[in-house]
Length: 493
Ligand code: SF4
Image 1 (tube, rainbow, N blue to C red):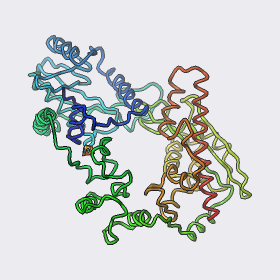
Image 2: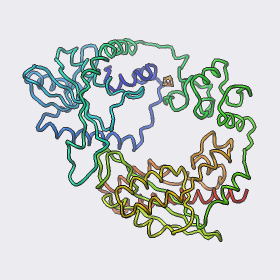
Image 3: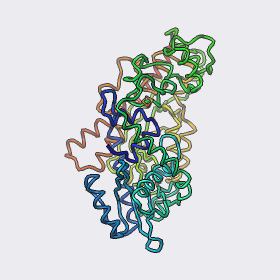
Image 4: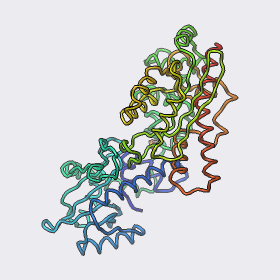
């Protein structure tokens, strides 16, 4: 059993979770690998290939870990440079792959370049790039291969695509040698401990520290390890602090409805707890009425779907910037007549520009635009206004006229069925149970992005392409139709 850089990262997050994974117990529940995860992995390879071009001709090491380690040894002995994906395995079982390794004949030492598809160097709990590089240096040092300097190459978030990709502008190279040196001893002792810990035949599985963490920190094995915790528990209280969670867990309180009335919570958290206890919705009818009266007809319900790529694919766009490729619009007149309009790009190059032209030709000059979680659409409008100045006034005017329907559900319409959330996918089934996303081929914005990616970049049979496009249109249409349904429900009450 090897300890790779990814394993080490997982170990630092939770040693128990990695032990379960490595020891292949029934208690380990692998995380869901979606097509979106696969897209991120593929993008990582794409970024790596671009970055490698900055080093000229080199040798790419392939094959199984053991074969790759043998080939690397030969290349290192020959002082062949640069080496891509050099692989090292120590007798103790540490395994590291370096993205780029460059030999310096004057110092007779090697320089490590780690390539990241992010636009920053991450130093957080979930991912610490300095630890990643220190781990690689550790493995090479253990094999008596001198490492001189260490660099991280990452995407430059200020880069704007104009014509052919300019590698020197697309990437930022940062010398992290000192930071790596500072972390080196810590990484060495943690790696030793990880190997020892993973070698244990048994570990204590009776407790799980995630009992004291909110739901988003739990790994996919949480449910198996904590069978007494229901799917909706104190861990789901919005923005609950670890101090508050500790107070509750230590008092053996796991169900939201068991929280004492005098337990200290924020006003918003208190509402969430009260809803669960009473199982009664809390609706401020007068506030909602006042809000709805301020809207101007026709109402334009709209929703964007966007695509994100690490290497920018559209002129004027930057790495990881959202590219709107689809919009659905439902226009509701004051006499409740409803019309639907939609746009879906079939090429990436002009997608955002054509989408704006479609909006320009479709959205009436007057009336309120209605969106759910409007900051998303508003931010896209501001971004593309900078790229296409011809439509700047139009796009900023759309923002001025946009009302965020979600806001009503943050303050004036709370329901125990929403389980503390305000996303349209939580609200819709409670207010209109007959109306759901369940039967759709595409059920989320992430799936929409993945599927659109396939229609643009994969060679598909025409029938498959049009089937995916159909599913995309249905999904986006439902997003705006759902808003109309919810709006009509509010009118009724
Ligand atoms: S639920 Fe949390 S503490 Fe428990 S194994 Fe998973 S990550 Fe570790």
